[in-house]
Length: 104
Image (cartoon, rainbow, N blue to C red; front, side):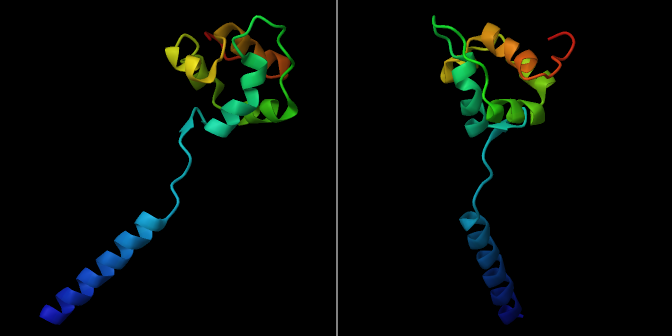
């Protein structure tokens, strides 16, 4: 009986080590990773200069993102972390040929 407990404990330890060593998925917000946000940041940057068009990569990312979810962040101070101007960010879907969700 003690031998079975030792085997079970060893199996649990191996599983715990395997889980600890596994890479964690990148944190995503509204189906966009940090890298995805950075693709769109130049086109939505809070600067006084003219707004550049979004890149093809940015538009592809926005096409996969949950735009309705992103609308919930349009007045969030969280945007400051990425130096994003909410007004410019709200223009990106239209510039990418995407439809902005109603009530956004």
